[in-house]
Image (cartoon, rainbow, N blue to C red; front, side, top):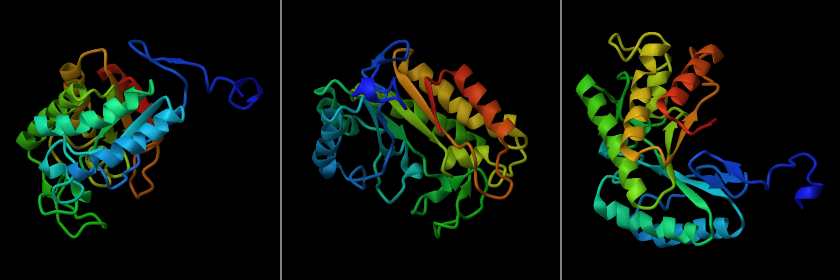
Length: 253
């Protein structure tokens, strides 16, 4: 098969990520199945990912898992912040590893997109997809959320994940800070792109410190915002370079 695949001649070749290697270059991106939000569905979710691993996918990324209550997509949504969460997620990682594939847990903070009354954002502007107006995050809240990301990543590693994907695109919390369309703060976390990216970069630095060097960190980065006053490509490139310097293994667009 590989010999006749002229368009993608390297797709079945291993990919070296430095501290680890993928058996081929087929990666399954994150898709929220709806099973992530209730612990009693994790048997079904494990079977779902096991089938993809059995089919030859080298690495797959879970649907979004929140680092804290404010980051829920829905009330009491999928979260990774306790030892009980670790036990539930071990069902997924063990099922995938049996087929020599790798699995990444996506850490997703919904920000103003959350469908619950605890929503927060860079600025207090309601999103068009949630009836709840967000509270603008204080600096103390930002700093505690950075710690929550790091704890979530550390627990993901304990659960057997090969890495985490930090969701920084599609309008969720970190993208809300990156985008001038939403982020109209006047403090150190707003303003130009260097201020707007301070929070996401702090998250990556904290996560890398928490998990060590032998762990994959993917960052999901928007190339185009598709909204008025969205980031321009020069700003996206500035963020990408800072992410690489902070310790990201892979940038996913």
